[in-house]
Structure formats: structure tokens, C-alpha cells
Image (cartoon, rainbow, N blue to C red):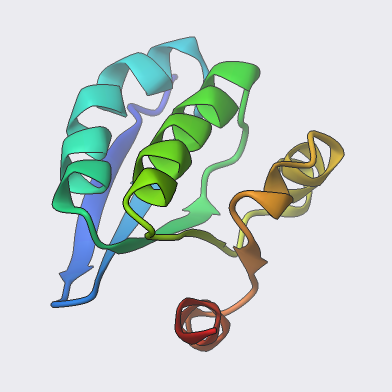
Length: 117
């Protein structure tokens, strides 16, 4: 049985947005959330934390979605922080060197620290 990929806005504060993605970021997962995720993050023009703790797998399309959000935020001098991906997802991000564009934080406190830096 396939898990439907969704996302939830955890917090929308004055200076940042915190969302959580649940489910795989593969072809079907990205297709299910791409426009809504972009609207909830990049279009708000705030720093963004994306919690990846519930993302078991990320294909190149998932990485592309995150790059799209990161670029839109960077153009507005905002940052994207990725929160606590599992070892497989973190390895894919680091191998692709995407962690230079969107740093990985292991805890919410560390993510907030990166936003203040």
C-alpha cells in the first residue's frame, strides 16, 4: 500500500514558516504537493524550515522541488533549512552537495540557530 505524500504547516511565524512533509518525495509524492508546498513556503517570503523526518525516500524530483523552493527564497534573501532527514535522504542531499544551498539541522533548535546566523 502506498502512503499519500502530504505536508502540514506546523508554524507560520512573523519571520519564518515551518512545514513538515510526510511520505516519499518521488514522482507521485512531488506531484501531490509541489504547488501547494511552494505556495506555503516560497511565496510567503519568509525563512523556511522543512521537516523531513517523515520522508522515507527522496528521488531527484524531490530534490528538484526543494531546490526550487530554496532558489525562490534565496532570491528574496531568505533561507531554507532542512530538518532531520533520515540517513538515506541526508546522504542523497549531501552527495548532491545541496546541503550548501539548504543546510541540514538535526534539531529544531539547531534550525532556529541557523536562521539567526
